[in-house]
Amino acid sequence: MLFMVIERFRDADMVPIYQRLRAEGRMLPDGLDYVDSWIEPNFARCFQLMRCDDLRLLQQWVLKWRGLGVSLEIVPVVPSKDTREVVAPLLDQLEAEAGSPA
Image 1 (cartoon, rainbow, N blue to C red):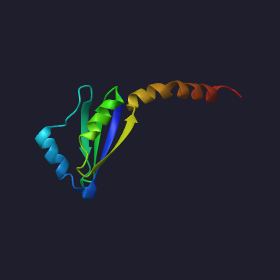
Image 2: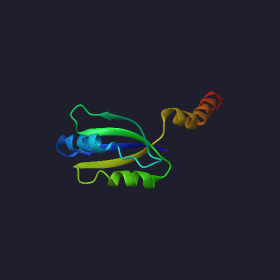
Image 3: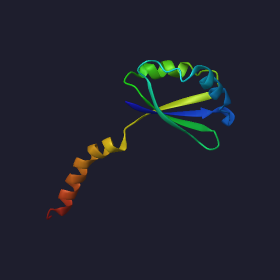
Image 4: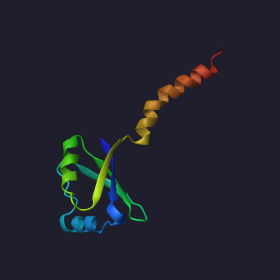
């Protein structure tokens, strides 16, 4: 499963997080994969895409970042291409209904 992890830095201060990251790396437990991340220009938030099948791994990882002035929100996400596949049959049905005589 994919998860968007939204990090909010207290007072837009990401320095403590970057210090820990430089010193200890991402500290990911086996089975939790970092995909990519994006930072807002004002340093208020970071958006990280993570992958895992066991939510306890996310919990283990979150605990490693306690006390550094960051809060973490974890949102399950589905890739757009997968969502299109789920929605396609409904769109086909709606198009068929719209084209049939009343």
